[in-house]
Amino acid sequence: MSMLMEPFALWQRDLGRFLTRGATGFFPPADILVTDEDVTVHLDVPGLRKEDIEIDLQHDVLTIRGERPLPYEDEGDGGRGTWRRIERPFGSFERVLRVPHGLEEDAIEASLHDGVLTLRMRKPQPREPHRIEVKAEEVVEAAPTSRRTRTRTRTRR
Image 1 (cartoon, rainbow, N blue to C red):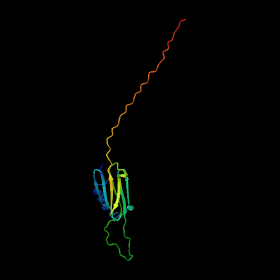
Image 2 (spheres, rainbow, N blue to C red):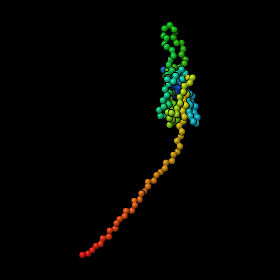
Image 3 (cartoon, rainbow, N blue to C red):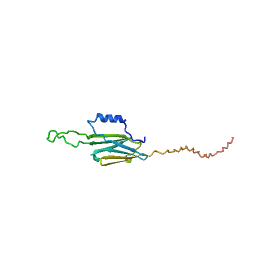
Image 4 (cartoon, helix red, strand yellow):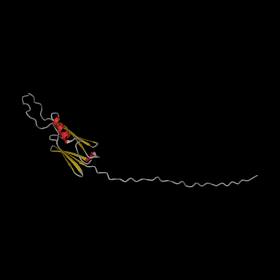
């Protein structure tokens, strides 16, 4: 497979985002660009530092995890007021992407700039057909053994 895709259908992902909005509202949007040579993924992760992001590759699955913590302390009745509205998403997130079969760890480059995580992956080169030579078992003929022919002389008595 040479495409990069999420293991779930889009409607399943969106339904999961809707159902878990209160618990984990942060789901970074991703752009995926595919060329003949590589795959590039851009994730919007505003406010995150490289220490806040984990990227794992296991088999053909790339997992990107992180957390965008709520930047406000709970003021409560401390005299400063309470939250009126919070529209920006915060919380833990996890994105799981299926990557091309045979992708090596060292083929992935990750960078974070201006709140955008960029992953560049070189596609694995397709394996060229390789002809296997069939070797025949060599039959080694044994050298003829020299037999001494003994001539017996029989004498009659």
